[in-house]
Length: 188
Image (cartoon, rainbow, N blue to C red; front, top):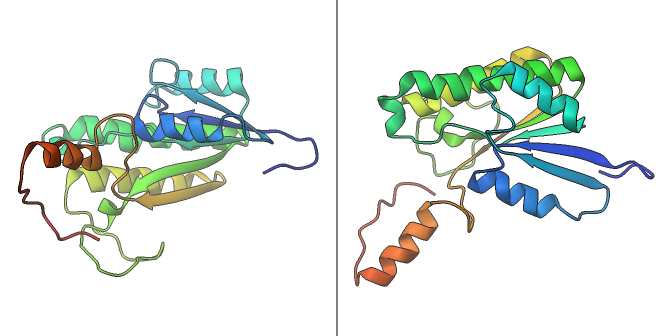
């Protein structure tokens, strides 16, 4: 991402979470990159003025959105909160990035498909979320696509790092506590 002596400025929203904090770590010290992470207290994607302030302070070339409501099961009862963050919050980011000429990289989920597959799915595959979490993430994707901003949407699953709670860390802990574990085996 280096063009001559140009430094690409990257702002990571959601830098307090496991994905965002790891992205900041990976980008720090890289030649040609200046990566800054913003936690929710400094960049709240549900607040357009907070986004605008962060864009003015950091003047990024690229925004990576790692901020999200990720409590899959809880989203069924916290529907409004899931949509405020994953739908309306993402729309706020897309509009602000579009207005400022900032490219947006958005991290989404395979839950937008709503079905289990044993083969890779392409970007144009039919979506059909089965729950609120996937539907709220799909709503965010659609607002990005409609915004006109330069963007990339990454759909992923099973995010893990040494930060925060995740499936891998839970399994390692449980493996140390029990001789036998019963785990679902329906995802690849």
